Length: 546
Image (spheres, rainbow, N blue to C red):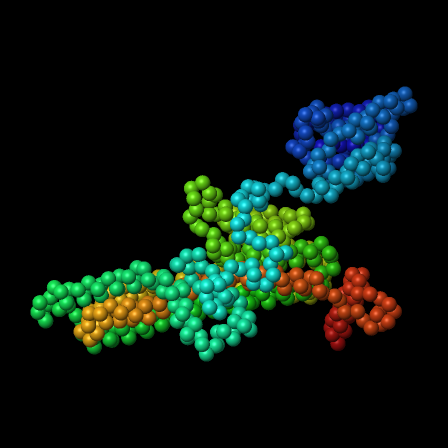
């Protein structure tokens, strides 16, 4: 640390040992001392040696005979290489001429402090978890400036009038419908929908998932049974079959069980869609309240960025791929890990919000918590709480309470989402249903053989197995709603809503102000807010006095 201390007139320049705990020779550091704090570990050791730290300069110029030495001291101090990211901080200034020559108005060090003051508040030391250069290039991220409508989402164009669902990169992926538009609703209710659905039957995600191994195994058993009964069995007693009447009761029970499974899963799906709706509404309310009641521009900008970042962070927390479902989990051996590739997409989404260096610490905190396996949405909620807490004193208490209530609303919805994410339907129920489906589908050929014959047994068994097992399969897919819902589209919609509120919000100008030529400037908006808050306090006082 470099100290500029006030001392007796004509006091000689002294140097002290670099150990901060060593008693410094020379005059003691007083409360009126001028100090410029430099982080010692950030100073270049090749230029400033340990014997130079700390300095004790006299606060007044030396006698005239030593003017040359004083000028040399100023010259050397002016050449002191202050690194851009050194933590430069002016603690105080004295009225002495010597300190003014060093750190006063127009002084050498003062000019250098002011030159680097903006840069000193930034942190070029970016944490590894928040440095995009340490991770692979994002493959699926699209800048928000290029996102227009639904064109950024890769839709399944192979479906006839069915472009409202995302393209699947694997037959095991479920169908993911995008937000419906009036055109989508018209196609959804079209009288030709059954014909269209039959044309696209091979594109059905349920059929593609069940075709192997479930339907393939049922077909193989049916073909083997038909061959044995027709070619191997020589007497009626040797024919393998099951009474269709007895098997019908088991089929009814299996159908009811599959329907119950689907109903339970759809309840979870609907609940999670409601959660995203509540999140959307709460963030819109917070954005509107931020523009209405927060008068500090820095707090306002920070809060709006956090509101834009929250759905992105929540998306990556609830879904391991962050909605980028085409990211392959297992790549080539020389490719980065799956976690690093997902984190690269995460950083790209956040950097699209934090385009400037303002509030960059918030970005670093969100990146570090996510990469280290922490709860990133909870961190964003904490940052929002910090912003609201710092607004106390500039925002009326009743409005601070409104902010806190909306924040509690977000926290409650987030907790409910985690409950659905971390708790499945009872696994014993899932296992039991799966085992019954396995035995029932493989026993179908034995029940159909006596009534449909060898050829009909194969087709009837496959059709019945698909009809019932598809219900159970859809229920299994809906059990994890955050893997089916188009959450990227939801987060983009929330971002657009906050952005619209931020850009279009304009405080109402009273007709009296407009008649005098007043404009809806920021100053007028702040004045109106202050007047509104004054009226609220006055009403409270009148209500108490009664």
